[in-house]
Length: 198
Image 1 (tube, rainbow, N blue to C red):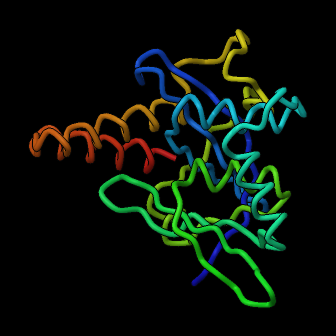
Image 2 (cartoon, one colour):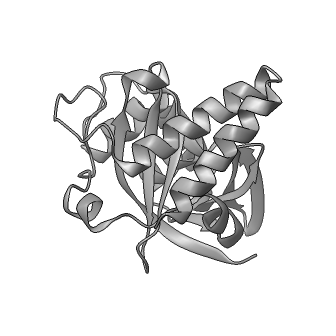
């Protein structure tokens, strides 16, 4: 599988996504961005670790890291390897006693663990081709800084392309779940138009 190493560019929230957040990944050797909708809890877990804030008691992802460490496992990498019906899938690649194990995970959980384990984050080339976009020069200037806390009041451009794309992907998922296929087709076409505008 062809895979592309990425870094976390930032976290953003939008009132229109109903309390959800978007994590924005950027390929290390390129300009493409990949927005992924994640929950508030996972966004907070990622932001706390990126900002070096240690909670008084371990959060779920801290516990997961402690368990892997105590069992002698090493998190080699995480990879977002699939996109099905507008839902991203990920795998955590662990090494235990010289054996490699792949564990299915949500991208948000995989990324939260990768941040704690200082493991690289990869995205399958096919996923990047299907869902990533190249930002305009304007977006490059107003890039979201890494480590923005979900509670941060820092103003961001609410109409930025990555936020629009994340919102549209969320609406597409919702339309499919409600079996509103005509609406889903229109949203899918809008997503294609937005990503091809680059």
